[in-house]
Length: 123
Image (cartoon, rainbow, N blue to C red; front, side):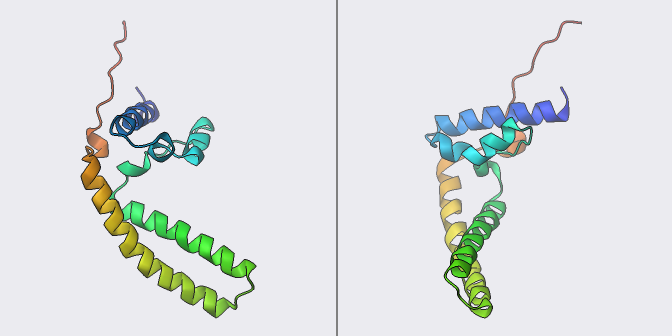
């Protein structure tokens, strides 16, 4: 198996594992990630990122969406920047505590420890 096939197989197993633990399909592998996967770009499921990666990713979404909202409301640039910095700090602690609790609750194996089925090939 190539590295891409191993990664894809591990992704499939990880999604099934998350769904078995009660994570809804839209959280186990979001619609955007499913679309990108169909286009050939595979990402590991969100809950298999590290707590730090999940936190910064959610902070990025949080800040970008708030910046767009502030721009659309005609706020001055310094206020947009101040809001972005403030939301990054608040979001970091908020998301970090939530994802720490959620990961502890799910008790998932490390990404490298996700067992993939080994295909038998006839030579």
